Amino acid sequence: MKFFSVIFCLLLSPGLVLAEAGDWLVRVGAHTVDPKSDNSDIVEVDAGTMATFNVTYFVNTHWAVELLAALPFEHDVNLVNGPEVAQVKHLPPTLSAQYHFRPGHSLRPYLGVGVNYTLFFQEDTRGPLDGTRLELEDSVGLAAQIGVDLDISDKWFVNAEVRWIDIGPKAKVDGTSLGRVEIDPFVYGINLGFRI
Image 1 (spheres, rainbow, N blue to C red):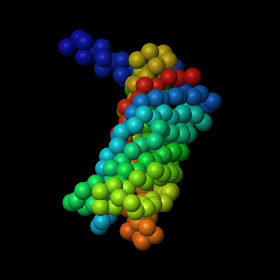
Image 2 (image 1 turned 60 degrees about the vertical axis):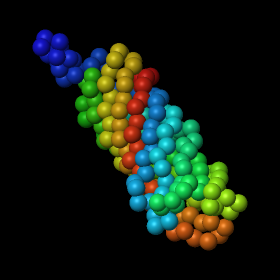
Image 3 (image 1 turned 90 degrees about the vertical axis):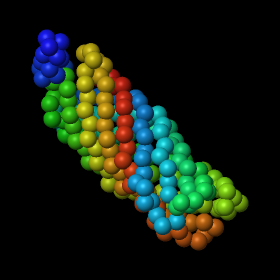
């Protein structure tokens, strides 16, 4: 019981460092992009996981701006209730404004809202679509996030977050429209962070 009391006090007590204007946080980890199940009437996009990093700049003790970047995510594309027909890669840079609720504490939740630009490339067809040309247009949409940082030292912390991103590219096969593919994923991330 004493152990849990110590942990509880640690989480509620002010930390040693208070983020101020001009401070930077750097996080490195992995995110899973988990598209919603009903992507379109014709095709569906599976989940993918990749290494990510983000940089956060504090405007003041509560408000910050964050840029999320990643190595290319890879996703399988299947016909609805059918076989795999393609693999695609994408890059999802996202710029967000964040509000940090408990600056100066060991446990710091935050909310963010911003804009995402998803760049699709290497749309490789296979199976029934082998030999055809699949195109997914780049997508611009809103993004939202909720996350928390937990200090493990004066400089280092761990981070967990969930994002929702509006990703809805138009798809074509050999120039014929398949309509819009509503990927709209939830994105789950675990990171190790460093305070500069």
